Image (cartoon, rainbow, N blue to C red; front, side, top):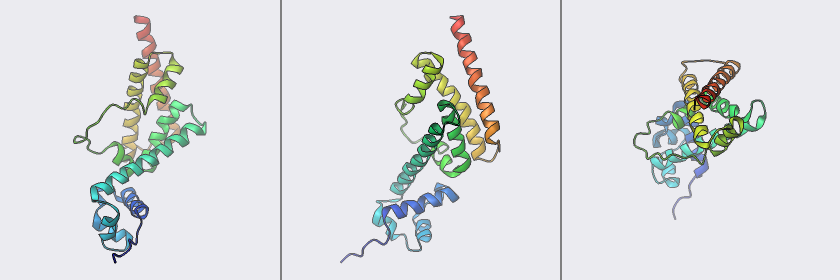
Length: 190
């Protein structure tokens, strides 16, 4: 009779997520998980096909964590919803550095990346409502803001910057209003 798995898929995933938080995704190996769980690597392969499957599960769990940050900040009411999305992204980079790096700073050159406007549709709708511009212009506005937000988040995640929340809020507002002025000027010129 085969031996029953001592660890559930969720327990192994939790250990893998903790390892990622502490040491980055490179630490998520069969041996590393076995050590974390106080066993050999065999239980890992009783629940997952291979280490690639474990890493995919870690990425999915990290995406869930990020979405929790996003949902929490956008519903808290501390900032207008669009700004709250950028603040959440930067807060995630500050508080979950390794998960942020995994999601937003890993080498994606081997991945097939498709444009997913559906996931940002609510943000595009907010911009359209706030600025009264077309969907295409709202999309471009969002991309320009996101590049700025991502730059700040990346510098915080890597320890290059240590800006506090108040300062981040101010510079995001400056960038937002600067882009609005730019878009309004372009409207006047056409």
